[in-house]
Length: 68
Image (cartoon, rainbow, N blue to C red):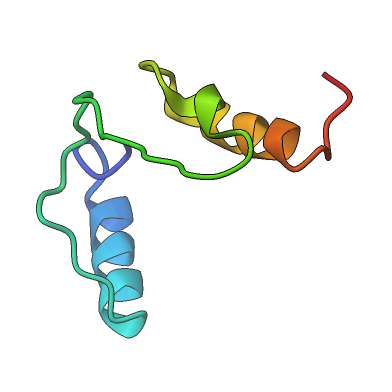
């Protein structure tokens, strides 16, 4: 997010990635869908396209940790 506009942020991110032994395939975000599969109780919660932020919510529902 900041790396394209701020050279200090880009350098900081590169240093943190190197120190944490993290490597990325690109420096860009992809809006492509990533398949998510589930088996067992609550698997039916994962049978359609969903926003990635909904995945932990669905896991909480399946685990009966949510009030939804």
